[in-house]
Image 1 (cartoon, rainbow, N blue to C red):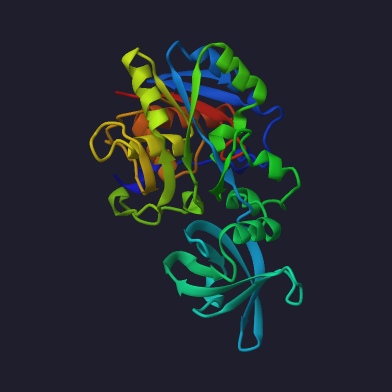
Image 2 (image 1 turned 90 degrees about the vertical axis):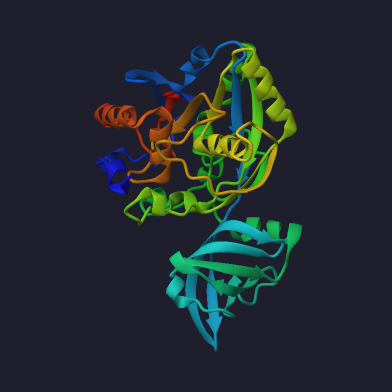
Length: 353
């Protein structure tokens, strides 16, 4: 399909710069075929049935935004990076700004040059699209702690370009069930959950299972090609355990539905089906790209935020709930002033078979 078929006009005033409080008071648009119903996130419980399984992504966002100084032949320049994928224990792939100021073998210093606790790295590769590979002077757990010490929460560009990073973002841009360090962008559908909502779901007898997908900054990259078939997704690391797979299979045997919280959970579960056509434990990189025509094997319902025009995520929800249905749903959301993107409102989509 042509990428411009997934375009729409979004008033800038509908881009959420902060989340609502409490988190679960956000609006939620329920989309079931052509039917649209305005709800709020607390109503999720009434949408769930016996034997349903809720799948959440327990990745934890790291402070992956680094600002530093590039040193080359005694000359200095300010540069910034968004780490997006760990390559090995000492090396990260990153998006650089401005990338044109960087060359292989450039030395980078994060923190004061004469500071004992500064973090240093070298540019070891320059790639297309403003990407570079950084090899740090420390590795493993030491590097992880240094990144936490020197980095800032990597807000999406549509927020970060409109306001400064705030102290509250450390909490707001993290799910309450985040566990495993590695994401450089939040699985934003999960930002709506509160401890109270989680308890109400459990009290209804709905089981909650976890997967881990370390969300990369590539999720925010624009699609620059004209045809969807020409777009290449950035890979992200994920894992689905045998325990989670077994629980999903048991639920489906009893007529239960699999409800993915976020496109990250959905992409990972569908990746776990690709080799054999059936769910199996999965651990590794995935660059699955879901567009209309994709045959879903695992997920029956999807809770997700409202996405960017022409984005791979809007293509995904159009594939899941139906292209025409999502065009109508987004038109309705704009008319009713739903809040868009990472800190915005939610939707609950039923798969269109």
